[in-house]
Structure formats: structure tokens, C-alpha cells
Amino acid sequence: MHPALQSYLDGKVLLLDKPLHWTSFDVVKKIRILTKISKVGHAGTLDPLATGLLIVCTGKYTKKINEYMGMEKEYTGSFTLGATTPTYDLESEPQNLTDLSQLSLQEIHDAPIHFTGDILQVPPMHSAIKREGKPVYLAARKGEHVVLEPRPVTIKEFVITKIDLPKVYFKVVCSTGTYIRSLANDFGKALGVGAYLSSLCRTRIGNFLLGDAWSMNAFEEEIRSLIEKEQHLPAIESSDIKMADQSPIE
Image 1: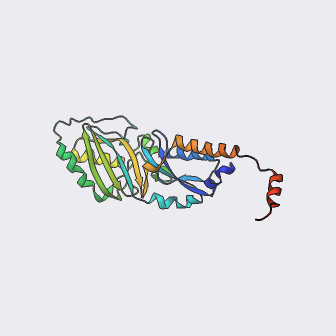
Image 2: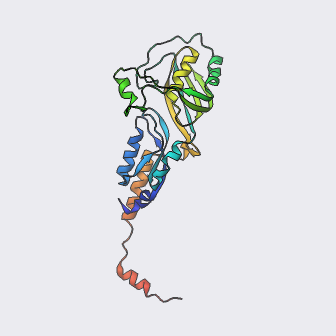
Image 3: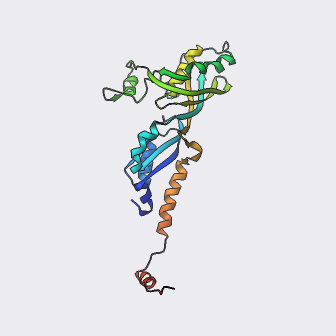
């Protein structure tokens, strides 16, 4: 590890804006490569098709990961109405196309009330939840039917911010463990037309805001800048140290 990056080894909490198509582990791996530090972890997975705030801890602050994971989350994004997908998002092809002509705007605005508060939510079959030590998405990809039990989650706020059919834009504030993909699927069921998650951005975790996060490019530039600055610092000669020690005290 480069001496300029000692603070990362000691421990830092990094706020990063996860790029589209990156996995959360891709971000962790990139930080390990840039800093040459192995003790790096993230506090809450974002799917590859989601963007937004990812908390990454290094050094001794990895002990705080569970604390950050338990914090309230805020998301914005869009559902596409009139179809479903097996993964509940754009990772798989839309199917079961449905006509939206009989759907009113008022119905769309009213639907979130059914999913606000303490609710039971069934996670997607295509998720990293483990059964018998293996992620259930592996079985789902093989076409095996996986039955998952409903889990208690809390959705503090769920509002429709814009309607541009077939897309519906939303804001959600929820507890950890909430699957927005499942919320999209359940929202479509409630309206009788089907829906899938077409975009998602995590904008807040606890009091940590996306607006304060580094882009991956900016973070990489910062690390390279720290290293370059140290490399260009003038070397301290031993004679300089000796002369400074012998200077009279005024």
C-alpha cells in the first residue's frame, strides 16, 4: 500500500455513486485495486441495473457495516406498467402485455396506500437470498420454482411523482430488506395490469445523501492525485534536519 493512502488502511467511510451495470462488489473490487487495501466492504447491495448511493467501508470501519446496513433507505425510479418480467426488472424480457386504456390516473395515484406502513413482502425469486447455502436466483435461472416466505418490511413513504404511461415515477422511503423490484410487481398486480421496475436510484441511507457521494471516476482521480502529490514532495536531506536541530532558540 502507498504511504499516502494510510488513512484508508486505518479506516474510512466512503460514499460512492454506483454506476449502472456495476455490481456492488465491482465497486469494492475497484477500491481494493486503487488503494491496495484488502479490508474493504459495502453496506447494502444495489442490483447491477440500479444506480445511486453505496456506502463502502475500509479498515477498522468495516466493523460498522451492519450498522449502516440497518439504516432507512430512500429510492427514486420508475415502474413500467402493462407487462411483467420474471426478474421483476429489465434483466429479463417483458411478457404478459396488458392494455392500459381502462386505467385511470387516480387509480395509479391511490395504489401506493396499499403498500404503505408495516407490510409483508415476498422477495423476488431472482434474488441473492440463500436457501440451503445457495442463492435462490441460481435455482430460478434453471427454471425451478422457488417458494419464498413473506417478510415484514416497513414502507414509510411511497408516492407517485410523475405519470407518463406506460412509465410511472415514484419515491419510496423504506426499511432495510425492502425489495423495490417486488414492490413494482405487487404494484402492477394491485392495478390489474402488471408492472416491472424499469429504473432505480438509491438517494439516501440514513443521513447519508447521494449528493455527497463520489462518482467512481472522481474517486479514482482523488486516489491518483494523493499518490502523485506525495511522489512530488521534495526529499528531506539529513543535513537539513541536523541544521534545523542546531538552530538557536530565540
